[in-house]
Image (cartoon, rainbow, N blue to C red; front, side, top):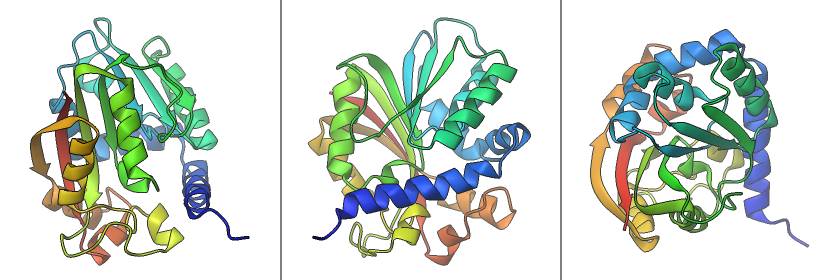
Length: 240
């Protein structure tokens, strides 16, 4: 009997990030939110977050939710729900959230982005950073995003993309998958997945140079991004 390759990849991703976040402190999380500001702010700029209920896919230790609160303040009715498979990430994230007295705004949940534990049509916006590439079944992941989003909801995803000459999931290497390389779709594949799920592409922002600079300056520990000549885009979408 052969193992399910999707389960194997998910397990590898879980172990990879459990190990990564074990080496992080609360201070490191806050520092990461500041270091990645060029990418995180580009994602945030695609949202009208006044009075919104937001879902952050693959939230890790709440880096993007923390940046939202730092950038826009905690005023209004904003509620941010973060979901991640890593228990260590969620433990760390909750510590940072509580230390900043943001527990009434940021809510962290353990779960799988391909089977979201939320009802239909409840989120005004869905966001993510470097997460969709990690999903073994991206079609299912996009369908889940559409399912939990309200009509007209904004979906903004920052993610690495492969060259158009590379097929999605071409490299069947679990380590490279966990490093956000092997599972990265091309820009065209990302567009096609979004369209098939009923999401309209509004804008695509190329942040490849920004991410390369972050890596080169030691602000994002991701040497594979440069080694494998990856691209990075922020995809601004809307649920039709």
